[in-house]
Amino acid sequence: MKIISDIQELRDHLRGQNRASFVPTMGNLHEGHLSLMRLARQHGDPVVASIFVNRLQFGPNEDFDSYPRTMQADIDKLEKEGVYILFAPTERDLYPQPQEYRVEPPEQLGKILEGEFRPGFFQGVCTVVLKLFSCVQPKVAVFGKKDYQQLMIIRQMAKQFALPVDIIPGETIRADDGLALSSRNSYLTPEQRVEAPHLQRILNEVRHQVLDLKDRNSASLSQIEKQAVEQLVKRGWQPDYIAIRQQIDLSISSDESLQNGESLVILTAAKIGNTRLIDNLEI
Image 1 (tube, rainbow, N blue to C red):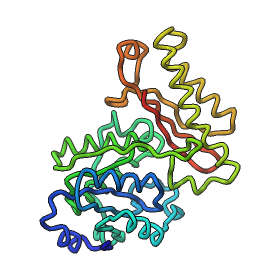
Image 2 (image 1 turned 45 degrees about the vertical axis):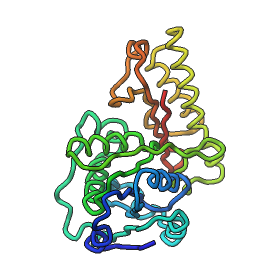
Image 3 (image 1 turned 60 degrees about the horizontal axis):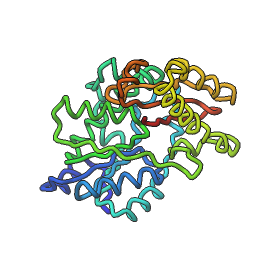
């Protein structure tokens, strides 16, 4: 595996490679990331991964400085997966000048849910992803469905800018107890790690309630959301949201849309202690 930090050197190595598949990451790799590498190999060759902790998507009170960085362990894992190039730029490599040009997603998608609770997050994500696409120039790029809203925003960005990149979704990989794998899981104390899978159990309960609603109209979607939030609070969580939305655009779903057979998704973000976890479940 070639490890490259310079943009021009990366382009030189990829010259003539018009089927490259790309997996951008922030490192601290786990099985969820590695599953994306395997999916990328199914859709293109060679496989290029990147590791870059992107300052632009972190808020002033977030964990940029403490975000787990495990470069050597990540390199070992990527080599075992047969990744061709690891693009690992420094901030000076990727942002040799202050990144004054930014990509702003539309408000109706970028300032709801995660965008509401993490102002500027999706602007930072879109800006770095567009720049990484420019560096790698892949045929396909793979993103995990755990970051559901992010996946949707990047897909729409690629479409609206007519980027020649196919966005491939990768399924969420979970631990045996149901917790979605995440680099931030390493922040959890042993007690919090035991409690953390309850977030996914709540999503499954919400899913069953929504399906019951379709059959019996026993409650409203907003009531189901409220009850789920209350359950988390009682268990000591600090939920930002539990939202039942339409899969197509993350717009607020109505009871009528459920009766009409719209595909829905339940999205959640909640803190346990100081660790903020996100998850989702499609219906």
